[in-house]
Image (tube, rainbow, N blue to C red; front, side, top):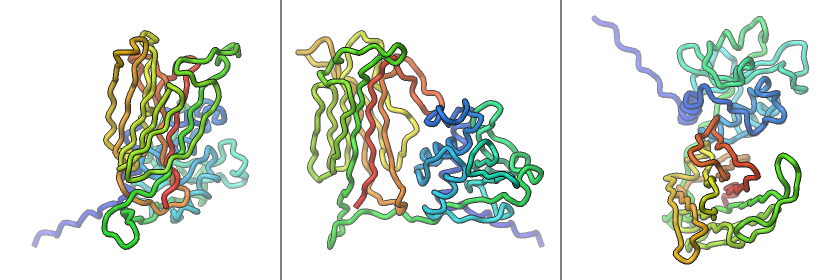
Amino acid sequence: MPARKRKRLRLPRWNRKILAAAKRVVGQPMWLDYSHTVENGRLGCAASVTKVLALAGLPAANSDLVTDLVAQLRQSGFRELPLAEARAGDLVYGTEPGFDATLGGGHAHVGVVGQNGDCYNNRSSTGLWSQDKLLEVFNAERFGDQRWVLRAPYVPQRRLLAPGSGDPKPMRTFMIRYSIPGSCDCCGAALSVPYGGANPGEYSLELPEGLVATAVRIADALQVTLGAGRLEVRLRQRRGSNRQWAVNPLYNTEAFAEEQSRTEFSDGDSDFYWHVFSFALPVFRPAFSTWWAELEFVEAPFDARPQGGHQPRCHNSALLKVRLSKLE
């Protein structure tokens, strides 16, 4: 009688998403949000995992230090298990015996467990997210018995429902931050008021979502419209400036979906045009207290391609961030 085939176990949802995100960005520097602290990627493992988690739609922690990252993940419900119980999509970390890993300095390491004995991690020698052998990177000679995995908790997606109603009701608040540089990036010289009429500085406002679309505007520089499950961002740009507005590609697609962009020209304003981005806002509620999702828009050179999940920024670029951080 032929042997019965062993049924292959399906990975939990978050493990699948973390694994897919880790595979997708191999060969890229994922630590750029912390470029001022990670020594050109040499100490970029925790910062890189932070970015991979955000890309997977699970921004449950945010740190460039392994021990801080691990503490935040535990607080968010991740379970710590022995390395022997590792499965693909778990996070794996180790600390060197005899050193205080809370001080940093390369005495701890973190990555993502892959398949077939592999792992994904920031390679210190290159500063790039890489696929390597798990037990070669997290080896006993360096870490001894101080090697563990962290597994994301099972969290079913839950629809937001109005009290006493079977219909989904959006209950989200968005924070909008728009920054205009007041001085030159390289020489520090004062910059004139840019086109659009908004003075240099940082503008911030909170915008709750309702069933009817609401629009907010900052001078003639930008307009954000929110409501009825959609978000629209309109950003003004001068014709012939050799720059365009672009969104950084590594954002949470569970919170912001179906991105569309277009260009609009006005007959009465031939010197400018509007770059318009629109997103669907799926209705769900994550169960992590540290959850957030963010879109980041920058002024990028024409024909520029993203690197490490970031758009190249023009000299003295303005910056817009739209963050969803409050669900009630």
